[in-house]
Length: 384
Ligand SMILES: NC(=O)c1ccc[n+]([C@@H]2O[C@H](COP(=O)([O-])OP(=O)(O)OC[C@H]3O[C@@H](n4cnc5c(N)ncnc54)[C@H](O)[C@@H]3O)[C@@H](O)[C@H]2O)c1
Ligand SMILES: O=C(O)[C@H](O)[C@H](O)COP(=O)(O)O
Image (cartoon, rainbow, N blue to C red; front, side):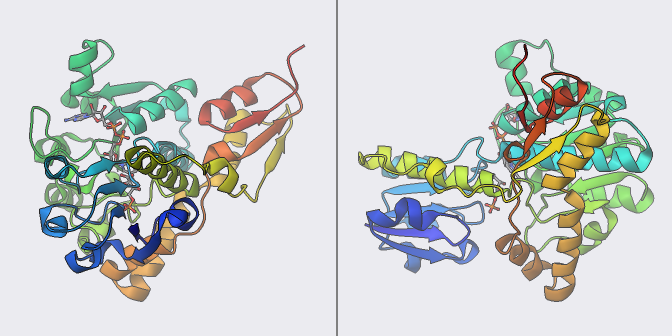
């Protein structure tokens, strides 16, 4: 078989190599001619997969190693009998790490404890839902706006977007890009909502760029530069609005989910789906191929102040400021459009909180509770 894969899918050779010739291509530039003779196409979110790319090709299976699927015309694939798989949840915890790093940073800057801020999560699926679990375990009050879930599960525990914006200190958006239907998310955070934000609120957007009306956001920030906005996703990536880039408090080039663990999970999920589709045996497992975190463990004593231990462990794994600084360096050196994608291609290895083993000399206590809630792997003596 001929397999065409985005060059940013790690371990594609290890997982798919035995099934045929593997051709690596830059995702944003994949053309009709390049994929015409492929049997399998493996993409990330930067390749538009539709009739224009695939009509008349030999492709029988398409996989996207991402959570988001708005770049794939799934109906067209189904109509053609082409198999399709995505990687639901693969990098959900990485996005959670990104948000927790951001909350810790602002908490430290403002001298405000994590638990003193109410966090409003818009879109509580794999990403937002898992984030809510971690934040609540940390003792943080969370509000959830997720109308499709509210409809299915009954309204209890859910709030509407207006009330969430009125009550939360942090508004964190984790919705997919949905262009039609009962609950579209394109410009979900539109001018009215953006105007309703208070200057002392924090807005985080890590779902898809089009979920926030960036023109309205730009206008608001021009009048109110103290409003803190964290943008990981943008309209018109990679050629994003430079004026907006300069206005936001933290700007990153769509890397919230870019931990090695999240990406590798995505590759393995596609391998499993592809094997099922073609009736092939599963010979490879991520456990055999995944590198260990080079920082294997960190030891914390019972005297450690829990919040300081959390800050230290979180920053040891991931600090969002590193990515904001790196993005600025790439932008200066290569310009926005090229710098945006180059940083993503050369992204330094980042590991999830869950790969850092925290050793405690005691079985229980506040430090353990906090670190476990944040998602670290705890090793402690058994309770006697
Ligand atoms: N920045 C990144 O690196 C990154 C990484 C992973 C995922 N994402 C994006 O985040 C999105 C969400 O990921 P997920 O794994 O949680 O997806 P998911 O499908 O598990 O959950 C999405 C949730 O959004 C809810 N939703 C749908 N329409 C809504 C609306 N109008 N208002 C509020 N909620 C609504 C759904 O009911 C669902 O619970 C992905 O589709 C992807 O676009 C971004
Ligand atoms: O949907 C996802 O999984 C994420 O947005 C993912 O991190 C996107 O990565 P990309 O396709 O941009 O490499």
